[in-house]
Amino acid sequence: MTKKKPSKKETEEKLTPKQLAFVQAYVGKAGLNGHKAAQMAGYSSDYQQLANAALYNLRNPRVRKLIAEYLDTNAMTAGEVLAELAKVAKSPVDELSDPRVVKNKVQALAVLAKHHGLLTERIDVTSGGAPLTFADLARMASDEHKS
Figure 1 (tube, rainbow, N blue to C red):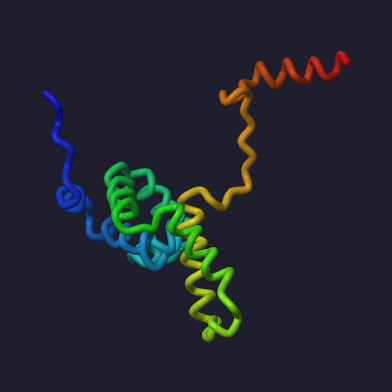
Figure 2 (cartoon, helix red, strand yellow):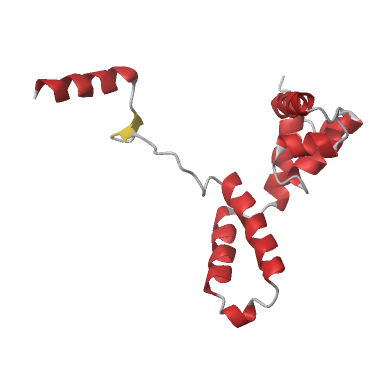
């Protein structure tokens, strides 16, 4: 017998008021910043305790599920983020009347771009489409020293 997947409402009901406040802050004003979200949700103001609360919440499967559901239903797609960034970048200076509005919009788009993995400084190292193993790297280093 398959288990019924809990609805968003059922997931919300299983969270404490602080956990629910954390999720709302995390996907809202905290801009996907766990430390800020913990502070906004009313956790202790001690830096380490806020960090622990953020880590605890972000590891909680119910919290993660609710965050994912919210982002799936309310966030822009990667394509929409890139289109908006392009629109702002291509706008003539005279159309950007209020620099604060543009700054806020670009910051919001940057958070969404980060969520979609569009802003990354990682290099994906693969071999023929498959990830390299440590053995592959060791063999490559050995071959390089032989030549």
